[in-house]
Image 1: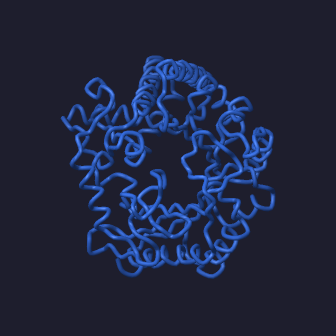
Image 2: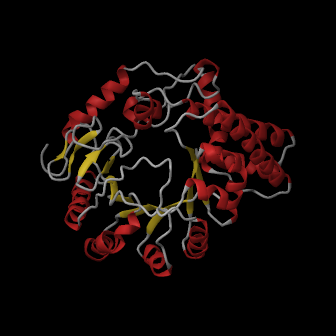
Length: 399
């Protein structure tokens, strides 16, 4: 490994997009969190080296540098890291550099929200729903209720931040609230909502069925909205199903089975491909921050910002993935079988010890979405609903 992480000669693009763990400390104690609680915090020298690492690699390949502030809760390092590195990038570097952050919103105030907007820091806001769900899913570190604090922060954010995006974690103990929680998040004014299940624990069949029942309620809500001539907010993973219907049908008709780039080992995230990787507080670079413990002994370790990355580590991950026999839950009967990418390879590795066999809940989740989206499409398509037709065509065009 030499210099700024030059992997050009290995045919692997240099890393220009890093998800950076500023600290593993947090204001909340979410029961599904994968972050190690041992106290670690990044120093400003490491943060500056990280920015310069990305800038060098960007100049090498032409891709714009990108940095995601991550944690723990990154705003715990607001004054020590976020503000000074943002000022360096915006006031001294003064070239395109995409900054973003994932936050639970508990430490945001009007001044900080203004700073985010003025410095074009894009945010993904973690919120799982109403009070009942937040009490279980996202309690504060001292055990108190987080809902009132987060609810107030949302109002402040939605008033001031354009294109607000929320992330909901679907957690088994609160899955019975899903429809109500989703409607709450949408009602607060978020423009984009992503819903992903907690995959780090086994879901009972009863909980899977409870989720499906909640999803039917959501699909019925979409049907009634389109019938009223109103195009509703549709959460990301559900909306993608309308494009997947067309894509799966096309691949099946042409005899193509998992030939899409995302289905191949070289198209996976978590391997240090596609300019993207993650970094811990000490400047060590990994394909993904999920699999622990994060040490240079991890198979996902790629290098560090001092010496650069070792392309052979990425090559090894790709080869290991290619050599596996993919698995899943009744794949021959799945509507997604022709286009399935089997999800996040690092997540799969945590759960099953393989890159290409996802947890059962991954299969249950995406099949349930596909089934219900198909139901909604059949009902509204049969009614020749113009509002739905326009939405469907837009989703297919967007992919």
